[in-house]
Image (cartoon, rainbow, N blue to C red; front, side, top):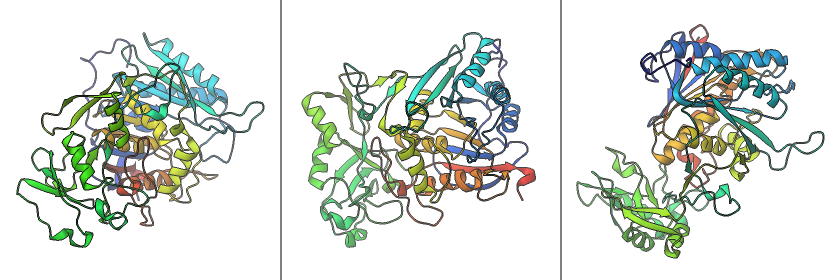
Length: 482
């Protein structure tokens, strides 16, 4: 896209499921809102085909090789500096051709290649009227990595925008901390009522196994029943054809429990503090039940949060804080959930045990980045160097949190350490890490059919074993699809 590009001469936007010339689908899994394509090829080849088909993206994430010179990394990291800059510039220019007019790109890099990356970005925006960028410093390793002098604990995000683009203020959780005079955000979060983690079984708290009744047409919670024995719940029928009965049943079919006792749930319901997530049409009893935690209720009672209205359909309370919860933080991000070791490497190994992928990013750091640049619930996101698939996974998580249907396209070569790029090797990055990760995130089980351990956090949003909605399609070049 040149500065003279207008909506009139912009190619029509193709749907994400448009066939991509030269590529063949070899696997599909998952269902629900959001379509996620994983493509195994050089990203420059894919960008060319995406441009031909008229596809346009709202946000493009670029995580190139950091060019550290280390041979142990799966990615090629031993480029000549000039060649590295030339390759990156070529991909920035190709990415611009599939970027929406108000879209944005974000490029991550560490201090060793920062000067090279900034030189490329400066060259890229110089000939593009109104384009601008910002440099974000993000703490990713609080304990620091050994190096000459001070320990390195951060990396950088270069956010690149056209004249009409930029980050959008968003609601941030309390884990973002405080500024000098106020909290970064006073976010009101609805949590799932279904208990996850330790003590989640029906037997662990019998008083928390009871039916919740919802209106099939509107999703309104209309009543809460008495606790029953888990062994006898199947004897209970829906009280009316228009009412669905929701039990605390986990995605794997096991009996769970609600987080609060029936009496407490009724008190919360009377105040508008119990509601439903997105209504599952035709299978209403699977609709998620949400509630406001005691911490939020306490803030309401203290006057820190206010109930300003009630939803006309569901009766759920609309809660706001004294401060505007939608903010843009500073250019220095020091957030516990952005720890790459804990929420990148450790989390990835829960999904793909024995995974040896180097330096995956924190899923919560990427989710926060998406909140700023893909706030539109129908946004289309392109991950140019997808690696382990963190962006696609973070998008699935964000969709499940806010009811969005964002789509992603993730591109990576099938790097195999020492051997290079081997398209069909099952131990390569694409086939051995990215695809298994998305499969585990979708189903909630590992390749060995074991439930994925742990919960999604910041805020607590349920067990990883419950899986995430979204359909996934795996594409490879036609000549390697044997």
